[in-house]
Amino acid sequence: MKFYNKGYVALMTVLLTGAIVFTITVTLLTLSIIYNKNAITRMKLQSARLYADSCAEEGLRIIRTKVYSGSGSLDVNGDVIDDCTYNITGTQPNLTVDAVNIPSPSDGPIKKVQVVTSAVLPKIVLLSWTEIP
Image 1 (spheres, rainbow, N blue to C red):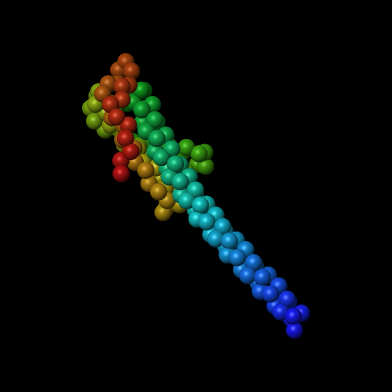
Image 2: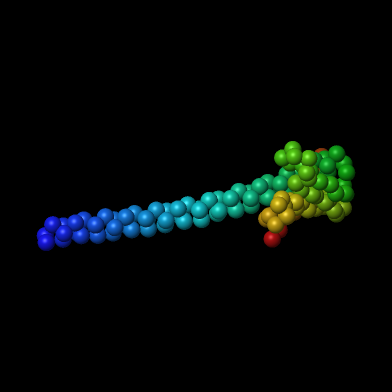
């Protein structure tokens, strides 16, 4: 009879250990998936801000060529699809450049940046560079 009890204890120990290892593995995999989704979201938000900032810089470059109003778009990553748009408004020297990324895919994050100048000649002087919610 003792022979069977030893086998039963060994079987229960293996099953319990297996259940614990399985639970730990599932927990780690779940945490890894959540972490990766958050990392992808952060990357998309950073790219959206980068595109908006790039368009704001393009707007400032256009102002440097003595064009003080207008709008345009920019392909930042070279895929022949516009990644952001900008709009220059105001009167010299108080110009405003509003820039926004074009989300890709269409449900991606949208970031808006507003740059305000206080002088444009001989150098562009920035009054503010802010992200608009």
